[in-house]
Image (tube, rainbow, N blue to C red; front, side, top):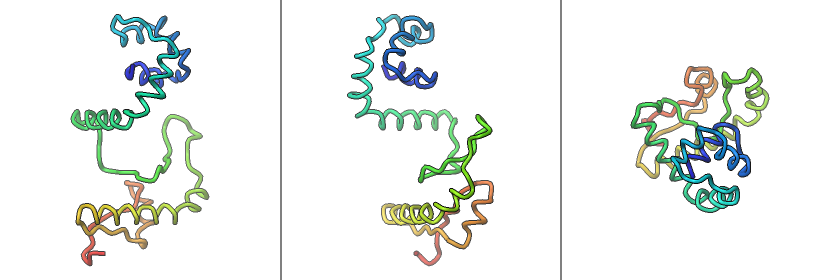
Length: 153
């Protein structure tokens, strides 16, 4: 059922009734069902709101681990604040400069809090310097540099 929902979402099909119809008509969904009967729309809805809701985080964690083992992920940049970046998919998909400037200070404070938690939990001494923010944002990583502190702050 998870495979069916994941594939349906990747095809922009979100309605349980449309997923049910796709399971009956689309050869790709039939292949995912592996000869089993197509699920009813109420079964899909119950699975989505019941079982999937509880297990979703763990399933996606497993998927990320699997992609990492296959070498499909790079861990060069980590985004912890939900930052939106320009994508090649649509020429209108971008973040306005004014909006980024407005929320820059709040993002920086969240990052500092996250770094403090990392330092406490893993007994490290990472710091985020405020002076390098503009330089780091213009760099290739597109994010603040986090580096070990020599002072332990």
